[in-house]
Length: 225
Image 1 (cartoon, rainbow, N blue to C red):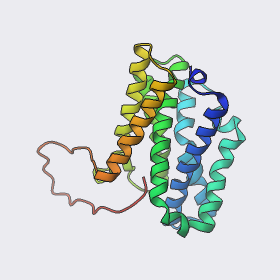
Image 2: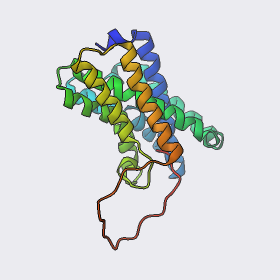
Image 3: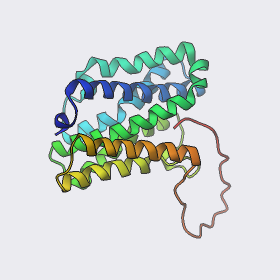
C-alpha cells in the first residue's frame, strides 16, 4: 500500500529529509547538554531512527530499514557534523528547524501507520504505531538526555496530538477504502498544520480536572521538541 501512495524514490527522499531534521533536533539537545561528539552522534541517531526502529521491530520488518539502508544511518551523522561545527548558526535557524520537524512529524505518522497496516496490524494498532514512529525518537532522545519527554509535559506545545490526528485520518481512510495519494497527503498536511498552529499559539493539552497539588510547577524553558 505504501508504494501505491509514493514512488520508492520519492518515499526514500522524504524519509531522508525527515530523518535529517529529527537528527538536527537531537544533536542540538546534545550540545545544550554539553555532550561530547560521540554523545551528539548517539542522540542524533536515536532521535532520527528510534521511532521507525521501534515500529519495524514490533511489526516484524526485520532487519529494520535503519540497518538495511546506509543512507538512513549516515544522514544523522551528517547532521552531527553540521551541528558540531556550526551549532551557533543552526540555533539561529531554530524556527526553520521546527517547521521541518513538524513536516517530519506529519510524514512519519502517516507512513508509519500505513506500513504497520501493510504488515497485518488492525486499524487501532496501526494508528498507535504511526504515533510511535512520529514521536518515539523524541521520547528516547529526552530519556537519554535525562529529561522528562516533551510530549508528557504540560508546559510544551502539542506534539503527539497532531500525530494522533494524522494517524487517525489514515486509518479512517483505510476503513472506508479511500486511502490514496491525495488523502494521505491531506493527513500529512493536517498533522503538519496542527503542529505549526500549536507552536504559534502555544496550544497545550489540559491537565487533570480540579487539580490540587502542592508541588511547585516547573518554570517553562525554551527547548526544542
